[in-house]
Length: 234
Ligand SMILES: [Zn+2]
Image 1 (cartoon, helix red, strand yellow):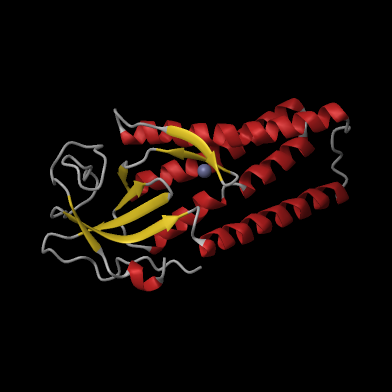
Image 2 (spheres, rainbow, N blue to C red):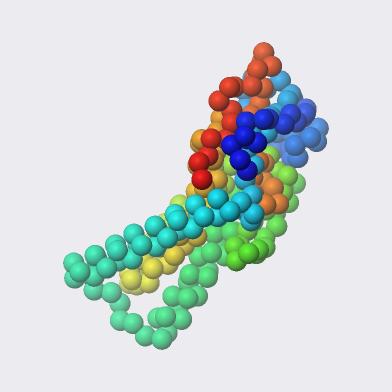
């Protein structure tokens, strides 16, 4: 999406004062709780497509590479300090591969859990894989952006913490460090979405088939905040 497209908002009507945790951009009963001054019109300010937006994919690649390089450097630094890793073996390597795969599967489950917790009853969640990326979808679910940020960041926080805790308890610091770095390098799509939310003045975020849409609510006087545009640089 170009900068220009992001600054020409599309209006979306929805029912103000409706029950919480609705879904869909136009459906009566859309969730407006937690958003103040809503008049009943939302303006699309940003759309992220994680499968087709080359700029977004390039950015994710750069971030992912940076995390991998920093992680390898940190592990090498720890080795240089004389922090002895566990003895290596084929079983260790097999366990490392299994643990890495598990971290990504659990990552998606955590997204699903938080979509369900914050999206309310009736939230339909689907898991899948496309273009080498695992995904969790609650397509059409619309949440206040703060809740959406929680959904986006929960796996990065919880899976990272669990990796450290399990690795420490099992006496496998090197394996834990590698899984930690590999998993974190796979969180870059979530981080890019959080950046887009912070760089826009959006009030609501909608989960879509290919990513996320951000909407700004018109305020009580019907004016959309002037800054409500996706300023994301790619
Ligand atoms: Zn994720």
